[in-house]
Length: 153
Image 1 (tube, rainbow, N blue to C red):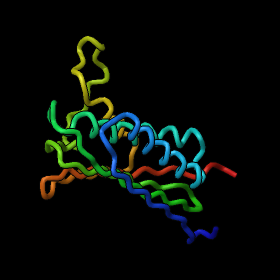
Image 2 (image 1 turned 45 degrees about the vertical axis):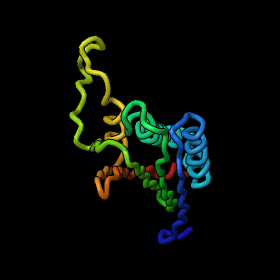
Image 3 (image 1 turned 180 degrees about the vertical axis):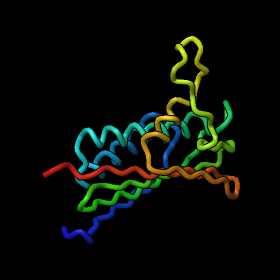
Image 4 (image 1 turned 30 degrees about the vertical axis):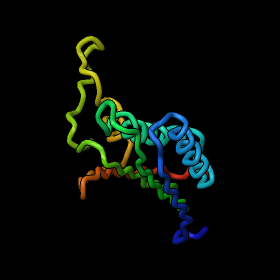
């Protein structure tokens, strides 16, 4: 590949709100990352981000007792000569929720003093290049960009 070449793979999923559907999405993402040349360690790091995003939508986007629905997960994996770039987006019709507006959790507090929730979103924010949220036409849209440099030759 020359410095101007890229290889791009797009994956779009309609994801049910159950563990099996989430596992299937994560397995396909892992496969796409491996195909793009990600090392096993880099794949594992991205899957932390992906699992947090997808699981949060599945478990918390709708009120308790709501009819189980479908949400979308879209991914664009781009292999470049200098590394891999992944844009991951979720979209749902659940309760309005802006992950980018969450307060930073107090990671210095003891386990007993910490409030529940927010640590996973904090990890997503720390592990990605950028994050974008919008609420349009009754739908939450949350996207992140993750990059990893190519391993040294």
